[in-house]
Length: 438
Image 1: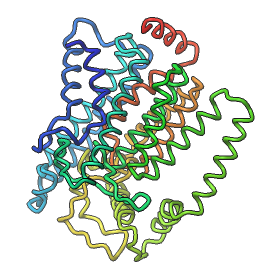
Image 2: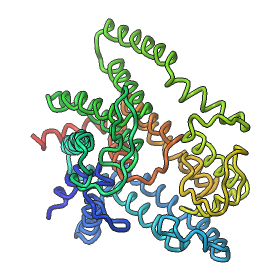
Image 3: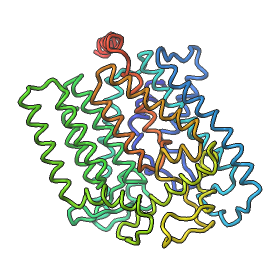
C-alpha cells in the first residue's frame, strides 16, 4: 500500500474515535492501525524523514516526551509501594507500570503522526489541497454518521446497527433529546473536531474557491448543533467572523459583520448560556462553599481541576503522565458537600493546562506553553490570522478539555506548523504544490 493512500485514509477516519470498533478492551481504531503501518513504512524506507524548517517542533515535543520520564519514574516508584487494591477497576489499567506504558505509547504515536504529516507535506507526498479535501471528507462522513445515529435511536433501534456498542451521550437541544457524540465518545471531542474542520474549510475555501469547501460550511455548522456544545457553536461563529473580517471583503461587508457580531454577542449575554458558561463558572471557582448542584458536571470538573492544582503544589516536578487518577484521592475536595475518597479514580483533570502542570511538572508545562506560542506566532507572521484564531480557540478549549493526547489535534498541528512559515517561503512552496496537484 502506498504511503500517500495511508495518509488519506487516516484523514478520512480520524473522526471515528469510538465507533466501528469491536467491543473489546482498548481496540485499535482504523486510523491507528493505518498510522502504525505508515510510520513503519517511513522508518524502514530508504529515504530519510525530511522536515525542512519544521524540525524544531518534533524536537521540542521529543524533549517534552523524554523529560516527562523523570516525573513518571518518581510517580511509579511512589505508587508501587502504595495500596492500590481498591483501584483494580480503574479503567483496566490499575497497574501503574501498565498505565504509564499505555500513555507513553499513545503520546509517541501522536508525535509520530505529527512527524509523519510534516514529512509528507514537506516532501510533496501529500499536497495541501489533498490534506484539506480528505480531512473534510472525513468530517462529512462524521456528520452523516451523527445524523444517522440520531435517526436510528429516535426510531427505537439499538446503536449497534451503526457498529456502536458503547454508551451515547444525550443533551436537549430546543426541546429535542439528541445523541451529541456522533462517532466520538465525548460530545466535546466532536465539537472540537468540527471547530478545527471549520478552520480548514474556510482556509481551503479561500485558497481553492470550489463548491465543495463552500458546501462544507453549513454541514459543519449542522454537526456543531448536534454536539450541543456551546464552545463549539461559539467557536465556529468566531472563526467565520474572523474569516469575513480578514478575507479582503468590501468595507461595508466588514462593518456589517462587526455590527452583527456585537449584536449576536449581546443576545447571548442575555441568555442562560452566558450565565452557565461565565457567571456560574467563576462564582463556583472563587466561592468554594457554594451548595448549588444544578450544574453538577461543572462542579465536578472544577473539583478535579482543584485537585490537580493541589497536586502540583505538593509535587512541582509532576507525578508522572497518566498518574493523576492515582493521586486524586489524597486531596480534599474544593466543595465540602462532595464526597471523595481513595476509591474514587478520576483519570483526568478536565483542564489540559492543569493536567500538564500536575503530571509533567512546572518545567515541561512552560515548554508546553512555549510550543503553543511558537505555532501561533508563526501563523501571525505568515498573516494567517484566521488559522491563528483557530489555534487560539483550541488553547481556550484546553481550559475545560479532557486531554491534549487526541490524535486529531496532532494531525491539525502538522498543518498549522507547515503553513505557519514566513510568507515568501510559504507562497513559493504552496504554488509549486498547487501546480503539481493540477
